[in-house]
Figure 1 (cartoon, one colour):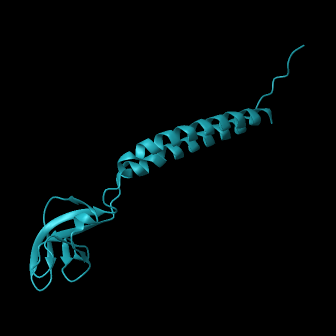
Figure 2: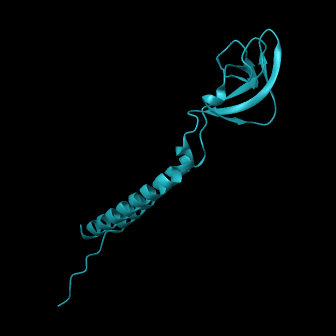
Length: 145
């Protein structure tokens, strides 16, 4: 006697293949969101008389021009992670002062940004294993149905 051969409908097979590729691409693209570090905002550090030396100014007047009377932070290195950028910026009030453009982020000293891959890789591996196992079972069920 011959064993019955069950043939799957070509559209069902194609649906399973397309959905599997979509799910794979979706979950592969998620780590790319974490690849580049995200910074909170840009600012300008300048020495303005009658204010704290090295004050971080964060209220923008126009492109690369910061407001001396707007929001600012004294001792920004104790609060934020500061990264200097190239070029110069201005802080405008009664007079105009030249400063250093910076990018800053909260909180200072948070090491989790440096260890994202150690969190993402094991979780991604487990997710991939689970989805692959489930996809194989679903594919077998779709072939039989």
